[in-house]
Length: 126
Image (cartoon, rainbow, N blue to C red):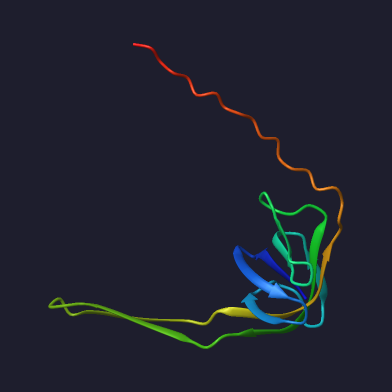
């Protein structure tokens, strides 16, 4: 089974095929299929092969389907300052989207290793 770490709307998620996750609103309709190419890490548990992106892995993507688009549970916030009769109440309901990971795509093109350069240490004679 393939696992991946993706960057979706500013948040990183560890996903696998068939998994359902809840994210911030993606502004997509229910039932819409899409893909994301911001794959930061790929892991294949069968081969124990791990690819790490710098910052992303080229020629890889994750396909997903929007299952539900809804508002989350209300979060209540109350603040006050002691001895000054200051009280304030706020509320917030996040816009959420449930998505199902359909497939993790990766092409095994030649992976180029970054060139390593040797740095000579300079010895100073005083």
